[in-house]
Image 1 (tube, one colour):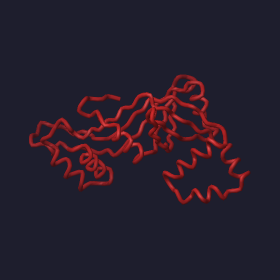
Image 2 (cartoon, rainbow, N blue to C red):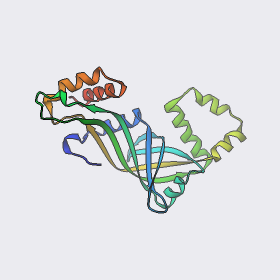
Image 3 (cartoon, rainbow, N blue to C red):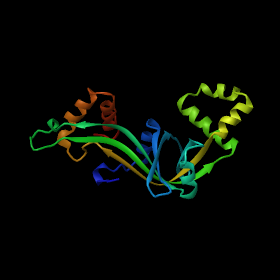
Image 4 (cartoon, rainbow, N blue to C red):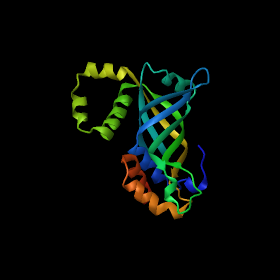
Length: 203
């Protein structure tokens, strides 16, 4: 994505925070005709010694697994809070509206996971992210039923090869910061999220 230096996050911890707070990602590959193919799905982030790894799964009927098997390089995007920026935040009138947002784009290399034990371990990580008490119910399912469910999915591990984290919060216009932050803090959920990010990056 377009990355002006003043919007480029230098601290990888910001990227990890954004991914964990906004795990519903877009996984993008090319189909057999070379057209972008997108699957929206939850992702689990692991920070390993070698870098970020993203874990998730498809329905077996989703052709995306086949695309990744033949073309394992793909992209994953995460979008955090975003919101309108009014020109009224500036002390002068020669300004125009804009849109602020926080996003992470990853270039990844995929490894498919199709053994029951590997898929079970991955599902337990996603359960831990979103509903830990459900883990006990999952363990109590009849073995043949759970095995059938696992057979209906293909899991994957995405090694992050390159990462971009963009935090667009008008950093290059300090005269606007006080009014922008106050407006976002009093706004809707997305705007309050932007106000929190302004705090995180010291604006």
